Image 1 (cartoon, rainbow, N blue to C red):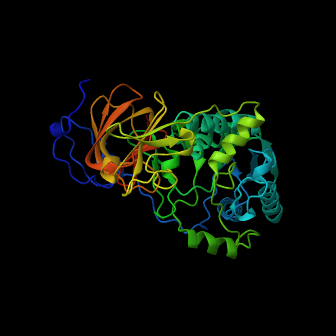
Image 2 (spheres, rainbow, N blue to C red; image 1 turned 90 degrees about the vertical axis):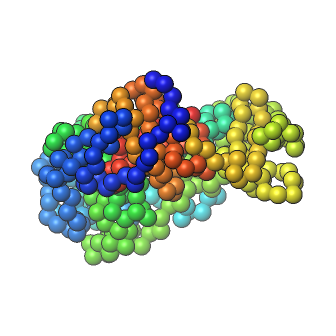
Image 3 (cartoon, rainbow, N blue to C red; image 1 turned 135 degrees about the horizontal axis):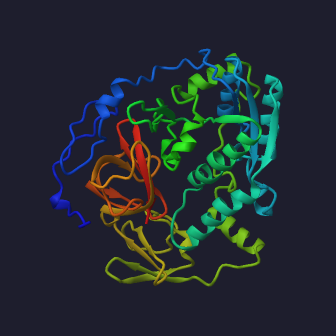
Length: 419
């Protein structure tokens, strides 16, 4: 397919909400049959405690936090047959320097396992701890380390969702007799009766929406997943937890990546490589401007990410930012803020959700990081799993390794990895 040029794009309009009619154009796809499908699909506001038990057993992924614990309490209150599962993903004492992390920032720690068990005992439901440490290290931790060493900025939470929480956990749930899982994610899922496909939607509470991290879920995974918190605000979840006397109702939220509770990624990478019997190579190289002027030297590309300003170790008399990490030449490329902005990027390993991979360009709003305001763009397929994205307006700090997730209003069309 011929690459689209920015000046060849048809004028764009704001993308319509998922249940608003959107006339399709000959050259672009704006979610076909949207009006027809949405006319027969309603997603009413859920009070959280409505008695809507489903047949069969549901496995609740219990992390020990207030969100997943409230999900367990809500389902139990509805009379749902259920079992609690907690995933042991990473030994927090494995790398000694991580042991000193403040407990309030930890996730998936021994204390969290204890809290999950305490909630299950409070509810009187079966509870099991499942050890996924090997799968987690192979599919999340090692890719995380390798991505940083290759000059990319990874999203381990999405990898965990794709390969562990909604893959291995579903397998385990089925083995113990549960056909579905429920999690504490803030997102929504529904089946479209017109297309027969399952759809992923943003959470009602935009400030807590986690759909960006869930773009990789397959139709089979969505069909067997419940997100009971998707219609609720965080305050409503806290209120429900208090009403149902959930033991962790006042527990603070975790803030960091579960296996890097200190938040110091570089320190973790160095510690992990030492444990594996390999040290970081002497990776120092030049810091250059976009024009090639040498300004100094860096001490390893894994210390930096696109958009970074602090810690560059150079004084130029005006603000400079990391514009790119050139692994081939081991150069750190810096520039002014305007040089961070781009209208084009390519994505790989795309997962399309409400429809099969399209053969024509798709108009959508695209988010290139979690807290990025979705920006209007045209997504041109290069093949079934790769595409070129052209934004209407330049976007700041489009970063290799991050995800580009496509939206039409509240509906998640899909997403892929920026390369």
